[in-house]
Length: 214
Length: 258
Image (cartoon, rainbow over all chains, first blue to last red; front, top):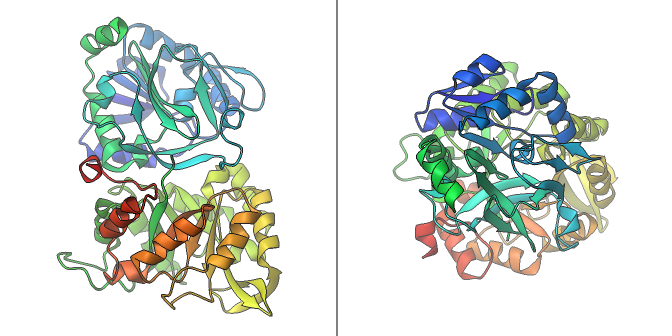
């Protein structure tokens, strides 16, 4: 069973529908017990980092997530959910993340051509920097849908794909059993559904060993 | 690079798509779910659902079909029509909309843009503006283009973006339905004034019109049209292939790219 962690951030409608469309059994829950029982976890998120981080902390779910991931349970963070996997974020201040991945989240304005629009919104192509079981059904250059104004950096050890916006922005990351997408697979058409399917098929033991080796 | 977006707009009345009449192979062209899936499979980058019903029964049918579509179609969905309050935002977002487009509702109550942006994020709020030249000035019209608000369009759009609108849809009343191309002069004026995505609407009659739009105006991010797609005059698949061949950044599937 896959649990979508519901901590009151953003709209989960499309995410739930996407999993239903690929025939997956998902449960939306905010209960530590359910998170412990789950085979794999989805950490969604839309909105501001501080808000989301506070909600996760107040509910105590942050500790449960860290514990479960420590046991090798696959976790997929999406958009803000991915950003929260890192050490810290500089969105309207300086806030600590879950620290599951090395790196920090900074404004894209610091690195992109000033003539480009913010947020980075729309369809952009994925460029793989390392092979990943998440991309099992994908091709280099496949398009996914982004909406974000902050990006993860200093995460070379977990980077698996970038998207070019005058700067190679972090698009997807993976380390051990932890995976993250800056884009929205639930809004990325067929390509997005293929990513979700690949995540559900990740073998916690085999795939984690493989990704730790490279 | 971010691709240019092609956006078909579906007018929905009493739960049915109005004007969708010319698709071979589709069993029910008036069914929003069928038509939305069809467009999504053909490569539409986003869909706009426009609620043109006035009655509360019609509104309930609209949210019902929106829910059904959002359960089947996994590309961004924008909803417009009859958005006047934060409750309206809430109602359509809960049914699976990703963005909400405001027009007359924001003219009546300009604070709506800021309140919605604060609650749902700038990326969720689309300001749609119907513009017509009056004495050589770009002027905002409300109520589906029937009422002159005497607002200067560029001032209104700047104000909307400052308040938190994350995207602007420019509907040129002057070129709407003429099918001789988008209103490049108007779109340039808007694109030069703001730094959020600009969506062109009104005037598309052919594939060439989209190529001209994107080649002439780099500040325009998307092209929106309704009847030319619904009547099959322009197919989305051939439009996207033509854009790609013209060197315009376009989202194609991996098999189409090779």
